[in-house]
Length: 473
Image 1: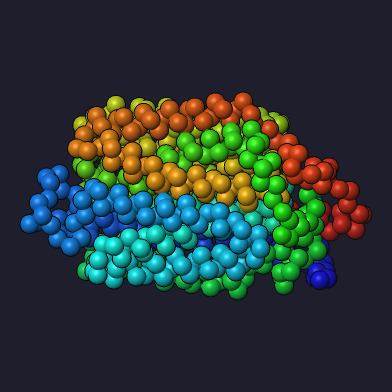
Image 2: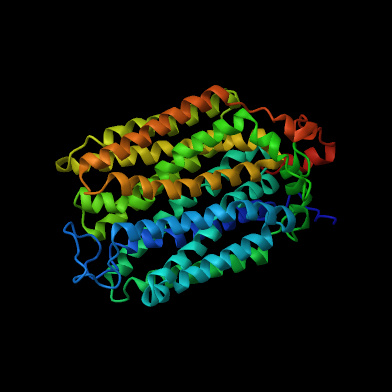
């Protein structure tokens, strides 16, 4: 398909910016699936007769229809983990065979429908609620591979950090939206059911927009120009569609394992804040329900800001090598947050404000992660980044299973001493994962990417230079 010719002297604002629209739309859709999944984490404290936040045990005679005990809450969390666990590998195959446009759209529809029926399922039976949660987990299994495909197909090599920073911010974006909205709607006359209906409507609209606008190959997009296409392909060539993934070579690569081990520590920490942040703030530190959503959302918002800034900085800093930058960014993200996670376990309830400061520092420091192991994964795996990131999705679903189990086994009485053990475990995982990553980190394409991925930036023709010099990246 011949792309549109553009006069470099008369370029509109969005004429060569199609990739940014794809980036924003993709981030919104990925965040929508995550938002649908975490709605229950907040509504659990406001949907029951006893609001599920009473420190006194609820007897069977006192239990209302939505007063779930700790075991039932854990099953609701595990249902999502099992759904994600079972769907992560099949989605990788579907993406490779059918592309992200159709497959991610279907995943979005599954999430939308599952979220919309949760209030009805909760009214009918607990088992039906478990089924709805399972399908929310199934759709979540599509998120990380979608990130990899968007980066591989739509980001230039010079913008990997920026694309990754925004696409991987779905946890923060979802919390920033869901927690305050859920808090306000739960306290309003509309009630907790409205939270699910609002999320379902928004995600449905976003995925319709995705299917209408997105293309698996930038070359096939009606808005694509020769200038923008050259920028996307510069130095990496055009990614082949349906290229077989060297699974064995990737699974035996030590750099990939260093990436995945760092991801495990970071995802465990992130899941803890999303899943149990409201519970810790309410039941252990004593904050009001209406304030809890904001106290979780504000640090996540700062995390997002630091993530985008660090992503741009990772691309723009030129006086350090990529390897050095990745080590520095990963250390800030994991080691600093690991240290403050350990500190958090020793702060008493009387100094709850210092716990909020510690959470704030943790969120800000982990914002640097996009310049660490995420960037390493895309630079080393290149055209197979979607597979590497899909395994991070697999790790995330494992963390979705381990996190509720960890809290269930340790935090039986919601005492600060019990939560301290949980904090220390997360701190050790973060610091240990960073040490392993710093040892193996590299920016060199792996052997399994073949020679085409490691070619030096191709020389541009004089006409291409003339066109691209007039337009900034």
